[in-house]
Image 1: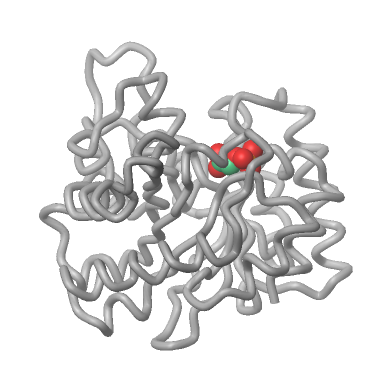
Image 2: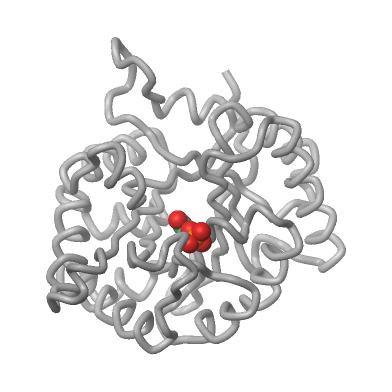
Length: 276
Ligand code: PGA
């Protein structure tokens, strides 16, 4: 059993939210491709002098590549600002659940973070706010840092339901979790308008900032302002090097969850460089 994680997480202190850039590799990259990509990123970040204190960089490879990617980063842990996320977790800890992955298995690979409730999981794998909630509880039990995804579809936006949908996803997804738990666990929220994911359509910085401010308000209302101020809220949806600077400079946007552009080191690094 692996007791050492890729990197210790840096919990943000009050009013000093460390930016987080997450690369969600989705169903891409074999083990050797994943290793090549993480090695290229590592070399470039070391050359930039990045540390986990300046910004957190997280990559989310496929399950088969998790252990190898973590092994590489553990061997370079003294210098690496890169941490590793799984793309999902199942809510039960073990048993007859064919195809599912348990928290202990992810931890054993050396992972620190887990993406929960990504819109592709909601769309293709019947995830609901209730399953997101069970998975978030499972991540807490296993000391994994959750990146909980929320966001409206195009028809929900056109029907004027952005706030209603996002609030429901947050409130139901975080049911039964206290503000202290959220802060201690370093839980991260990612706002990803479904219509902007993989479509090349990005929310304008103003559209994104408005929803991020709304989300922080929902967190303040359901927990406390102190809790809300400490939590990182990421934007996701067609983030690219050329649109990231403006998005990431908005109040209440604390980082990015990047899909397509995270598969090319040069693009992902371009986004990372725009995050400070
Ligand atoms: P995209 O994906 O950057 O390819 O739009 C974002 C995501 O799904 O997290």
